[in-house]
Amino acid sequence: MNRTINKTFANHGVAWEGIYGYNQAVKVKDVIYVSGQLGHDGEGALVAPAPLDAAGKPTDFSGMEQQMRQTYLNAIALLAQFGEIATAALCSRLLRAIRDR
Image (cartoon, rainbow, N blue to C red):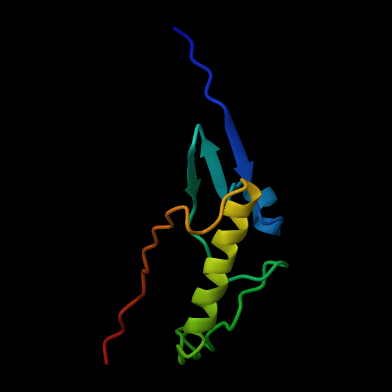
């Protein structure tokens, strides 16, 4: 038996989507799967990036709120491409590195 599954895709139009063949979201039947989102603007630049020390480690996490707000706006924009709104169940998980002091 050969089954055909209809999928539709949504993207932000940022460079890495085309470079890596990356889709930000896919709708299969009536379920939307949104990939890991970042706090980037419409051009793909990170919003409020943390300054780094000489070793390349973040020195200040004060921009995290701005980054999270942008991340949710990006997820909401993807849902809108499918005609959905954020109240249609949005589950998130925050992963943050813990630094030894």
